[in-house]
Amino acid sequence: MTSVKEQEAIRKLMVFLQEWDSAHRVARSRILDNFIKSNNGKTEPELELEFSQGASLFLARLTVWLRMTYMYNTCLDKLLKSLGIFLSAASGRRYVIEFLEIGGVLILLEILGLNHLKEEDKRESVKLLQLIADAGRKYKELICESYGVRSLAEFLATSNSAEAQEDVQVLLDSLGRGNPKYQNQVYKGLVAVLQCASPRAQQLALQMLRVMQDVVGEALSVLVEPVLRVLGSVHLEVQYEAIQLLKALMAREVRPALLKGLVALLMPPRKKAFTFRDETTKDPTALCLREPVLVYIQQAAAAKVIGVLAKESAEVAEELIQLKVVHGLMVAVGNLDHVASQRHASISLEYLVHTFPFVEECVKKALGHTLFQHFMDSPETWYTKMDPVQAVELASNIVDIPRETARMQSTEVGTSLTDLSRDSHNFTTSFCLSVHRTYGEFSGSEEDQDALVQNNF
Image 1 (tube, helix red, strand yellow):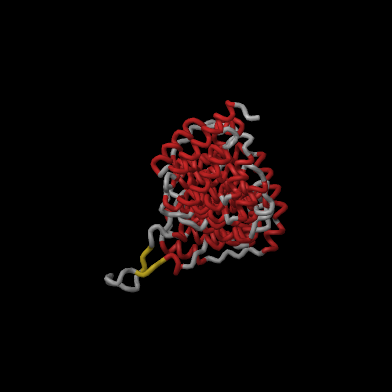
Image 2 (cartoon, helix red, strand yellow):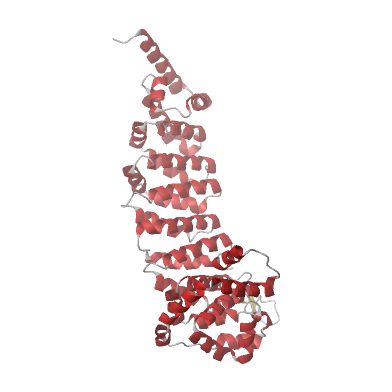
């Protein structure tokens, strides 16, 4: 038999629900304010006590009102926060199930695609989706089955809120773990984000791809072209993440395709680098540079990456040489229109010359005695003294190193790299002297010098 106290609690619940049902927008907004203020952080038992074991009745009303009004932005922020109290309640798994049964996931995903809604409201939707994903694998699968990966990837690519983008990153990372059925779908969604115009989204996507690589195993072939393309970003943080991902991919089957693509970026077709002048110019056939030129930025980044990868692995360096990387680096050094290309290509070429004797012989033959001596004396600055005739000659020289020669000396190269690492002090001293010629005095400790070398200047 129901006690008097329980009857009074039930009566209060019925009055509260009737008040909600008969209230208009302003009154409901006030009810939500009071609910958020008094119930934030409560557990499932505490919510049930507050609503006399009828909390699900209020949750159902909140969800129905969300379905009816989310397109019109009616108290959407308060409504989503109120739903978050239920979904985040400890021991409140049944609230998650009840929310999903009414179609809650689809509503939250649709909110992300509505341009007229506020970024803050969309961020709240992402937080609710995160609470659902945290409930377990089958809930992650439900989000993915509802085209959640596509919706989240699109929102990541188009959002103007750094905080919202970071929330999406965390959610996508969660969907990609412990969810083997859809982990490749998440991976492909991140690859698609690389083609967007948002540098922040590209940076976050590259970070997640690197982390997910161990989860998915072998990299998908669709990754090659987008990763190489983002090397053309003018944002250094994007280039940095791309380089880190490329380093991780060297242990995967896509390595040959990536190396081939990097070498190709060193030699962009001239028609892509130039464009005709305006019709008002006196010489209509004259060419002018685009500023900045995308292919030149890619060229410089590729030259930098090649040096990083070659220093980390003798095997990778050998493959690059077989792909005619020496000729490509010389083409980049001869690019008088982009100093960054010249600098990074020169540094990478110097490493190959010092490491592979047969490369030194070929480069010396191609450059000639005078130009090669300038290169050896000051590899960081020698290109600044190059005239246009020398630059054209440098780019036109075909350095053809037979594959057999590279293979034959691969074992010897591995030994020389080992000796070089053992003699790190001499290498560090030589490197710092080169830096000193260009940038002035360096007064760091020996540990700092070693750190500079390991971090590729």
